[in-house]
Image (tube, rainbow, N blue to C red; front, side, top):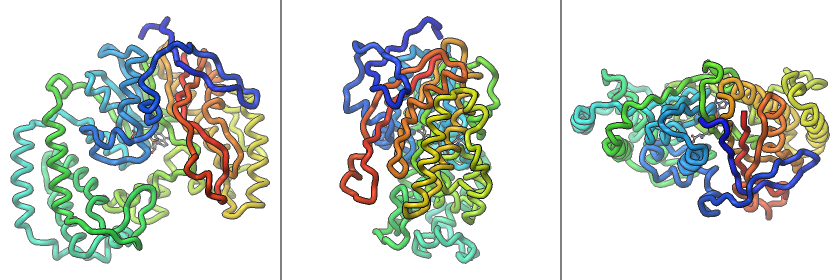
Length: 452
Ligand SMILES: C[S@@+](CC[C@H](N)C(=O)[O-])C[C@H]1O[C@@H](n2cnc3c(N)ncnc32)[C@H](O)[C@@H]1O
């Protein structure tokens, strides 16, 4: 990447609480405002080939990736990284453009989704033939009488009628017998993606409500539609893109296994500081695939591996509450550490007064401690002159405003980045304004760009 390159973001937001925001070039022209406002959401990816396979509400827009790759002049000579790669939106776009990429994701099921979405070197003719015979055989195969539904986690049982669930489990059993690993993974993802479509429970994100019944769809039909769509998407991929490397690592963005100064751009959307429990939200998929079967197993195999972004990850007794800010954060930015200490004290006080007794104080400390480690690791792996670009949301737990983008920008300077800029994508939180239970702080989603 050209180390002299200037990133010209169009608009920089106001100064807040003494944390300085650097000025950008106001003349830079960008895609239209409406398009940009959707960058942090999965809305556009829902309909796009490959991206649409798994509807991950935490995912961002593939258009955002295209925009950032263009803005940073990324070509096939470069290597791109997404440290919180989720379902691989960044990697799918890169691969489509024949750009090599790496993704790191700590959630084992989500990492698998990204891996399957970026495995394109399948023999299409055999895949077509195999799919036809697999579906034909499924139509005739007996429902798995041997499966004892009592052994299936309750949440999964509550989401389907017994008949439909037996059908789905039967397909799962048949998929388990597929010899070719890539075919097996593809079919397994198709079945997993069909779960929410066919369920009799309201399985919209974020919560699954087994008590709220909706019209149940036949599992086999949903699976058939899904695998047909996936094979169709794979067939449309240009030949030259099929073998481009896309390495999706199950790992930790705070301590990635990547080599120093090896990457030309890091683009990501980390967990927001918004109490979203990624482990809980994917329970249906995780339980159905046998990755865990109880809350505590989910905690051990998933929750504990993720950066702190939800109070369900906090075990209150296990912190030294007199010293919540890590040494790394304190060293990187004394100013941010001090601002945070005050916010944490305020949140601790509010915890005693408000309902729910949420540990937002520990959540905020844990989030910034973890994000400091992610900033340090990204600084290490980027080539000099390259950028770490993050789509972020700010936060106001119990109404206490936390300017996440500004704080991470300042911490970024402290870990060595030369400068940063912030571009506001949209305002958030309007739809809750009438709710008296909610805070009334207007929030924003933004792009933070740190340059090494
Ligand atoms: C906002 S989502 C990213 C979504 C992604 N842009 C997409 O389009 O699918 C953040 C992701 O970070 C993952 N994550 C959380 N902690 C992590 C860690 N320590 N290392 C790597 N990934 C992590 C979560 O599991 C989640 O999938």
